[in-house]
Picture 1: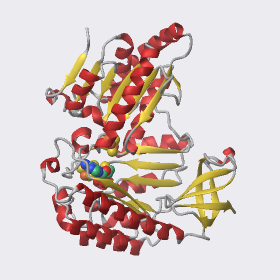
Picture 2: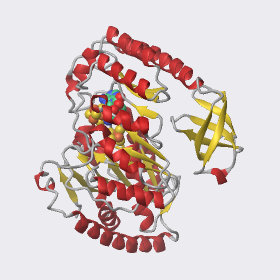
Picture 3: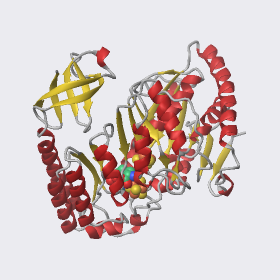
Picture 4: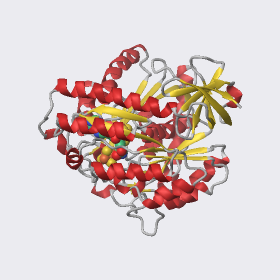
Length: 487
Ligand code: SAH
Ligand code: SF4
Ligand code: F3S
């Protein structure tokens, strides 16, 4: 019988943290992994080779981190990683639904995977992540993409060993999606993409309900991890050779709220700073409304916190910001930027901007362009507004025509690029420390390193330098990156 566990309404029983004691659940999932391992060995005999898997990530850093956990489980039970979606015996799409084009990409690629599955009937396809938290997406996949084997959401990722086992035992589509999280399970095996740097979740979900944004609905209420668990993870990563950590959350500045007696985010940073072996600390994302004086001081005085702050502004118009429910005005944002620049002069600032929000007028958009000119971001991610079902703004009338939006978007993009080039070019001639991340994909005689301020530099080197820190002279500016030389 098909196992349909779609708990659309019945989620009250999953909101208690005592119903499933975390350690007991961890133990249970470890047992499930052993069973899954047996099933994967049987599959290997049938296929004549170790089954291969390919995990494809859409969306943000949070999803990237989840994918590392998924891959960790798959490798632990005997799958071998491959880059080829076409050939993999198991493909996992970890999806994003923040804008509609992310969803469309998934549907498009599923069509192609279906053709591959016809050639290889043993092929399995699993979908997880934010898109799967939407009831209409589940319905669409159930009716039009019946060849998919497993669907699960963002709240029960820790059950992946069990779901994998069920998928391997069944011929039917398995659906297990919860409306809310019941618990934070700490201990899943992880395969990190980079041996020398890692994301670390410090909180899950979001309580801000910006009126355009679907994240609170698909990621649930804000939950912070206990700082001692976070520090334990950072220490373990450092012991494994990780020297750069990125603390992850939708609004890291509100870390700890809701946990009695928990550290604040700046205090957490100070504790992470003490971990031996960690040389660089990054974090994402900072909501301007909660960025405290204390955080600025901790960043200023830190030897390890990188000189980069991603501070999404979304719009330069106070009226639009109000309708977006962002809780700051244009003036407050600019004052915050001025304070940051004063305290931390070499700080690189990046941002996110939405164009075409329903209430936005042409004049509002001009205000955004002027704000970008004034701040001079080192980089900005610009998005055209995409209505998301269930969010308040989705039903509001638009003020600008599509032509006005795309014309304004192009103009904004030009200003963003011009300003970013100017800002990055200022570093020319300086010598900075770079963490080498990889061999350059276009020119194998070069390696690519990342500076503290997140700018990339390509310079002569080889694979043995990956994970090392080198002083690099930034010789030639090429727009958003540099060509350099080791000194
Ligand atoms: N928590 C982060 C943002 C996460 S989503 C923050 O508050 O800054 C990443 C970015 O996607 C947002 O900053 C926003 O610019 C963009 N975004 C979110 N919803 C969107 C929508 N409906 N249409 C277009 N862009 C959107
Ligand atoms: Fe979305 Fe706003 Fe939460 Fe960021 S803070 S995830 S934009 S609701
Ligand atoms: Fe997308 Fe989910 Fe991240 S909707 S942006 S993957 S939290």
